[in-house]
Image: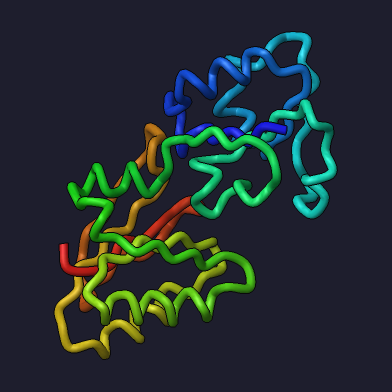
Length: 193
């Protein structure tokens, strides 16, 4: 199977990804991933929406699995098979904010990982890293901001919503006046940048 990153928004598929998708006979992906790749999926290809992510490693060997963003950034890169990278929200956020990726620590706070995500964010900020936090809509951003406000150094906060989409917007504030998420697709950049 081939796991293909479709980018974090429209128009972010790589040439390699397009080439593989255009040869596919069966494609799996979330509705969002399929939408991002649909213009390259062959007419006679079977397309299936992924509703259950538990048994993906049991799919056919010739299956193409679409992963939003890059499969290796909180995506489907854990599956066995070839991985074709995509343009991630991390890459887009750091480009928009002009932050070298080498200064960034990535923290994923999805599902049951909210508390760990908060702890990891605080620890990375204490180490002087800029944190790129991938969270889900249930993540308690206000609780994180409260924990971060106890740190001695001033912190900048960039809330990145719908990166790569026409409705993309980035709100910048500080720990005393932090931006609040209003969209389901968002990430937060925290640190001295």
